[in-house]
Image 1: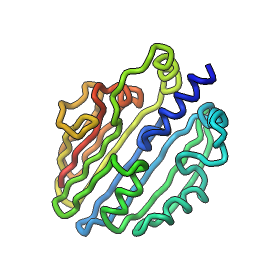
Image 2: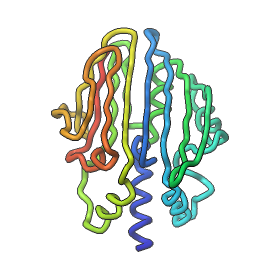
Image 3: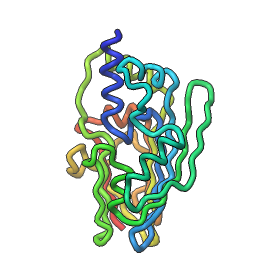
Length: 214
């Protein structure tokens, strides 16, 4: 069981956008390529305590405290932490952060923990994001554990710009796909958005991403 939990933790922390179980990210882009990111993510207290299994409980894989965020954002040229809050409710710790970015490079650095899940071309007005890169299948025991851990958690993403936007879905390699049946999405307008259960994002065959143009 301990080995299974350890594998589960490594899986969760391999992708920033879904590593927190519940995630809400809103991006507001200005004409000059600057903008603001507002994030709120939920970390299960159970999952937080399981971090001790790998001996790195003092080094959280995603920023949690304000000090964590300040240290992380200070390493990114063109990014600034505007506000941070943390609160606890029932089984979750909820972290909120607002970050201003000066250009597309700063936006990519903030959003992409691994450096390869986000790309932006502000000149051409395109944003490519990969929410779940692998789309791989998991054994029965791990699947049951995931269903338990992810129950009740959701993933949401939104993007707005001064002019109309359009969003299309991709697989984990960036190839176009049809809209997932489990997704509630707004695909065009000044603000485009996606909302899904976190487990549906993880279970999306072939992975899941989005391409936004504006």
